[in-house]
Length: 449
Image (cartoon, rainbow, N blue to C red; front, side, top):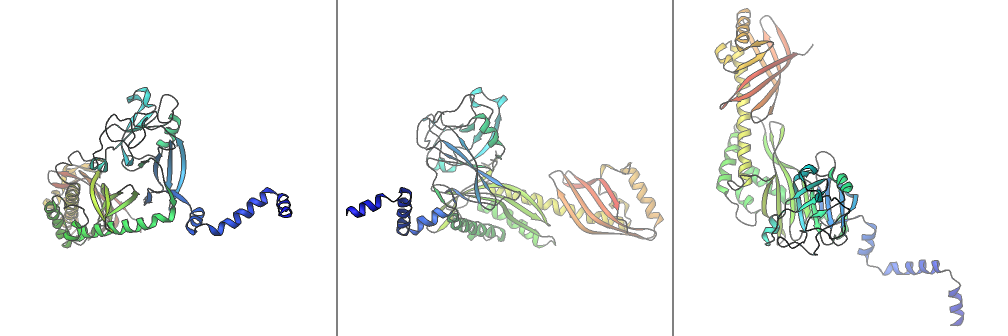
């Protein structure tokens, strides 16, 4: 025994530690070893699908009084870490005046700049959407929860419930905040998990949302209703509005579809949150119609939508459910598109037929082009009708850019007459007059052959 003790005492301590760790490694659980070698991210982060570069998420850990900014570019990575100050009383906010900070998944709805704030709020304040659906479901109350700056150095747990940052730090963070898009997730403690662990929830949530979207597009109302935890309100109004559009679409040659983009998936407790843009694909044009926030919970092994909110909040949301209002906007967009297509076809046919009265009816009274008003323009066209025995107008690659009261139709125009031929780009600027669309400006640029 004495010889052994003497031998060990002469071995350097660093070697002993190394040997001990090597002996310990085979005894560690494989899950622990895998986690240590894997990239760790906060549990709430599941997936972003940004259409234009990176997306960002803000996380606040009350236990350590720190704020983290994560960036998503195919994977999540920590971009900034700042100190912060939360409520003077520990725990999740339950009611107004309890000096606690809310915990959950929130979004910013408004910005107040320094000139509109008392000095204690620093350079800027971002209004959070507390209480959200989940808070109201569990009876949590209160209001005016902000992320804001301070006119003095911050101290841990020193706010009345808001999240407070030093002004310089908030200035940096502000560059990454987009209203109604950038989430702020507040937790007592942020659990860190291997990044690949999020993939299962990403797959199941994405699959559920695609099924929800497909059921809506196809008008499969039984499958659509089954995606909700409770019967969908005003399903009859939604079905009537959407089926009308689908019927019209089947009678037209151009494509029409509804899908979602810019998908954000986040995990909370006990719900998940999805943020997405509903877009309409109308004759090869993608147009965002509204942004939705969905609260989802598991029912057995299946996800169910427990709440559906339009963002930004619709002041008239009490009158119609968000999806019904969105479908009515689809209907307006679809009807306007058909009307513009019909107007361009009528304009070309009237010109080719030399029907000057039909041709004039396509124009607004205040039309101007080539330094001519409508009267001079019609007189010019009448002279061309007399000059050429035959006129034919061909239209290819019609593209329509729609707005509520103004739109633009651009196409390749082929002009063929008994005395003149040309091919060029025609642009018709249109405006709504009453219930009709009329041409109020017109330009043409010849393509040199």
